[in-house]
Length: 555
Image 1: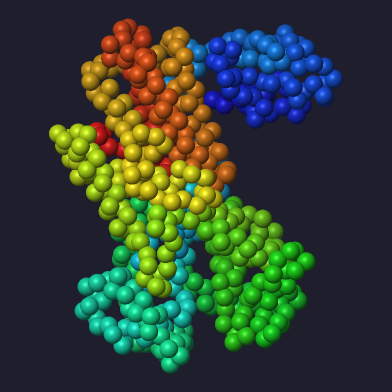
Image 2 (image 1 turned 120 degrees about the vertical axis):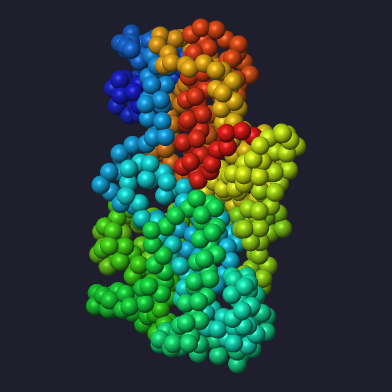
């Protein structure tokens, strides 16, 4: 239950909403508080007088059990016994579905994410778009939306001409088939190291042959694509990420001309130094380049065609692009061009920008071969997780499988915990810490809760009329806000809200675990604490699942 919203609506004061209802610094004062200072100017009374008047007019009920006015604050006491039975009953009845809703029923959300380049391995820089998009996919499904995950493959451009040129010079089928994506990448790097004007011209010619349907060139291209998808799908499977469409740039080759024709017909397309552009100067942006002077299309051309196709095919409620913040201008231009074309749905296009992920030694370049492969990062995290788990619990069964779950979770959580727009420097030691704000800490809390339940040997029941103490109540309040936390994450396109919630709930549970006896408790207290432990475990599992992270039973 959203207590802030409930209190704000019950007060019925113009200009006061749930965001004005705060948590007091001291729970002895109340569970929630409304500062009355901002009302003083409107009502022309002192905050103290306003708080006193509101206290006298507020009617307590089964939800709010008490109200007090202290120094200009209106403090509210929640009916703790009612909250306890209400929240626990909801968690137990909904189980894996606790936190879900039908908010998105009848609406479709398209999410363009990961968008790997054909013939290039996954590197650490692809991590954010993949796991942010993958988490948003799960969040919107949980909220009842129809979700279309789109991997807008980078399968168009002269780099494929370069690959064919490199393959014909230095490669052979057996070597590339055996080495897969990494063998292809080595050829690409070698071409860029040795390329001269003749080789560059040859690469452009091979790309022209691909575009013109040349059999040999397209067989090679399709083979490179097949090897790439075979490689990336193994990583997607590990990351628990899925897609419904792999329609890449090449898919829109025959869909760009209608867009160009319409831009021309509407007088939006003008010539500039031989190129075709849409002038956006009056909107504070440089021109959007649609066709180069040689008639070749660009990213914007293909993105405009893709937007048209997605609207016609899926009739989306929102279309999200999970792409790094360096492309802010590009998407502003594309969305503005759609608006100028008269597409009222241009307002439903959203660039979900994110910061960069790198290791301590800095940035990377695929062209120069200076990259850190994502599979290597995952493998190293799994190895380090195994070492840490073995040190802490050498007798633990299935350590290797548990280490995979923990290591992979650390990689994903490391990219999702901070606000998506922040640049992140990935640290193996930090993400694998059992202390602090990590997935390992949350997973360990789950293992602890699971151990408590296993050791209890008692079948708890839904508590009725039990009055929680302060530590128990803090956990309950956190459990109660999970559904609105999921909604908030969806509305703000921000999985970090759920990641931070999971850490906060884990911290509250661990404080409760330390301060309150569970297995040694008796009667209703033991029953309640076991029920609270079970509800916490379920909610943490639900939260981590929305991030694409598994939960081992033991650690």
